[in-house]
Amino acid sequence: MAQHDNGDLTAAAGSAIEKSEPLQVSSGTAVVSADAIANPGLPPHRERVTDIDPAKERQAARRVSTLFLLSILGSVFAVVAYIIFPIVPGDPGSVRLNTLFLGLGITLGLIPLGIGAIYWAKHLMRGDEITEQRHSTRGTEATRAKAVEVFRLGNEESGFGRRTLIRNTLIGALAVTPLPAIALFRDLAPAEDPVKLYKTTLWEKGTRLARDPSGTPIRAADVTLGSVFHVIPEGLHDVEGVLEEKAKAAVLLMRLKPEDLNELPERADWSYQGIVAYSKICTHVGCPVALYEQHTHHLLCPCHQSTFDVTNHCEVIFGPAKRPLPQLPIAVDSEGYLVAQSDFLEPVGPSFWERSA
Ligand code: FES
View 1 (cartoon, rainbow, N blue to C red):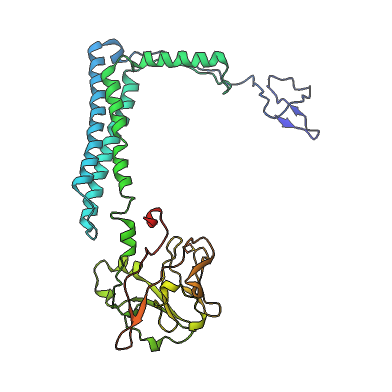
View 2: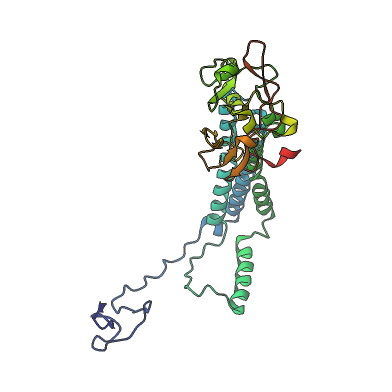
């Protein structure tokens, strides 16, 4: 087709539309070419062996059921393997075994299910070739009735209602297939009570506050007005599983003028001469709150800009965090080193729904 300046469309040579008569057509108008390739039609239908031999048909049905049964066994195997080969924290070998057997089980659960369905369709469902004309997607009452009829025919032709063994094993396979996923979702939950998990860190009564990363203990006299220290518990480097523990125990230490601190009455003795210590883990989603603005005494989380006011027990003054940074109660030991009075008294890190439990 050629398009003229006036926007008319004229049928090209050989078109079913007369060449000499400009025709107003809207986009999407179908123009049938006279030289279109003729519809070759469908090749003659060939019967399958299962269409003509009842013994072969029964054999094929047994194969399909066996595949569905295999799928059930695979899914059950995945769940059992998940329990028998648990992931032991700190043991990479256990992760490998768990992943290997769980993966094998899921594979055994899914592959026979897929093969069984294909085998069923190719060998047992009716094998007529049909041509389906495109039609409007909106269904009229007549087409809806037709759909019901087609569904009924499909049921009849596939033998879904009649072949009870296949149907029941398929239902069994489909019901069991999601089980490995349930087992996997279990891993999304913390292994232990999250309140206990996040409230318990390496800090305990008498643990010295040390510089991160050198591990050198900090004297109260070293902390000058306006300074900020990134802090870890002394001896952290000797602890097993150090990365996780370090993540929970990271602390920021700052010194303000005591009169600038607006401390809660119950926390009046949690600071030392204007020196305060707060968890470094943002209460939004756990980024390290590493930016301290000396003039305003604000701590800023670089991830989503949550801002905490150190003068007001680190309450949130901006951003998506929903609760203040947990405070670490501190004191000074007989040699002048800063020490923790106890562990944190609330869970560190992001908020979660069990937190108030
Ligand atoms: S993690 Fe700190 S603001 Fe989002």
